[in-house]
Length: 98
Image (tube, rainbow, N blue to C red; front, side, top):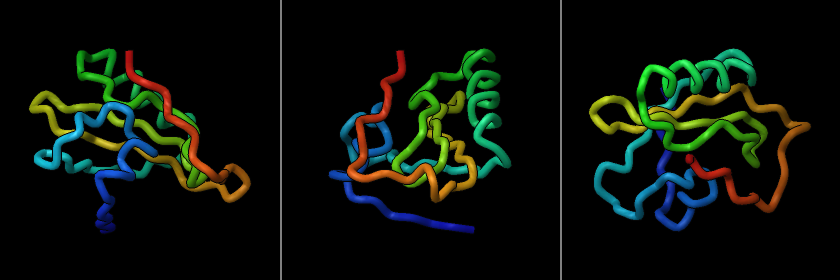
């Protein structure tokens, strides 16, 4: 189990779908085996009618990352293993959900 706390100022670096509130801002994260799995799971979940919160993208920490909201509005993060060769700084703005 891993628990992380981020400041509200840092949310925009990895979550363009964040609404700017402090309540209900928990993201339940799942690690998946591959970068392609992030895209596949995101497509499956949004295709089933769940809201795409943060589309898959290559994050600055070296992992592929996406967020989908479950039917109750809870954010669910999907992250691949980190690849040190894909890390970069400073972070660029993640893509926005359409």
